[in-house]
Image (tube, rainbow, N blue to C red; front, side, top):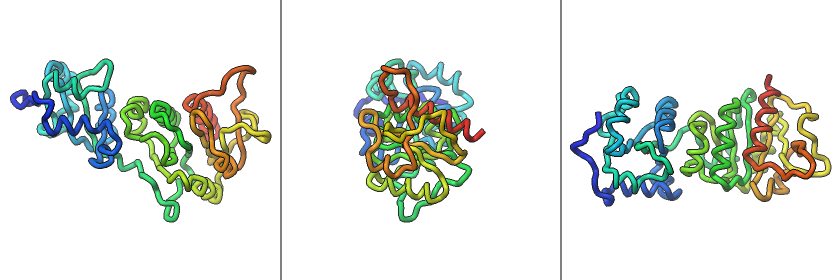
Length: 278
C-alpha cells in the first residue's frame, strides 16, 4: 500500500518543495491546490469527494496509519501515497501535534472564486445564505464556515477581501465544513450590488451592526429567506454595506460587555436563521 522502497529523503525534492510552497496564497492559486493536515481532514476530504492529488506519510507513522486508514488508502492509486523520511515530514509539517499525514487536494468546485455580478446565478429561494464582508482572520473565517455547515446553512457568500478560503488556518478551523458548503466570493467593490440583487429577488438582508434604528435579535420576526451580513473583526461592516441592507440588527448583551467577535456573533445569527426555517 505504501511503497517504502521509494521513500523521499531529500528536503530539496521538487514535490516536497511544492507542498511547502502551498503555505503561500499565490502558489495555491498557481497550482490550484491546497493542503490539509491530519487524519480527520483526510477522511473528510475523501467522504466529500474531493480530488486528492497526493498524500504524504511520515515514515515512522506509516505502519500505524496503514492500519487505521487501510480502507481509505484502498481508494487511492499507489502513486498518490508518498512516504517521506521523518526529517522531510518535519519540513512539511505545520501542526503542533502532527499525526503523520498531509493531504494535497485540488481546489473545490463548489467554491466559485469572484463570481461576476453581471452574470450571476443567485442562490435558489430555498437556500439559506450567510454573507461575510472583510473577515480577515482565517481562523474566524474557518470557524464561521464550520458553524454554518453544522447548523444547516446552504451557502456562504464572502467579499473578495476576506481571508483566503484555502489558508491552512481556515482549513483547520473549518474542520471539514469547507468541503460541504457552497461558497461564493464576490468582488469587494461590488459586494453591495450583490446585496441589492438578493433584495430584488425577494429576500430581506440584515446587517449585523449597531445603529439608532437597529432591531434587537429575538424581537425581529425572521422569514425563511432572510440573510445576515457579518463584518470585519475590528471595524464591523462598511457604511455602504449597512446602507445597502434592509435594516441593522443587534445581538442583546449584558451591559458593560464588549461586543462579540465575528465568529461568535455568526453562531448566534445562524441559529436564528435555522429557527426561522423551522
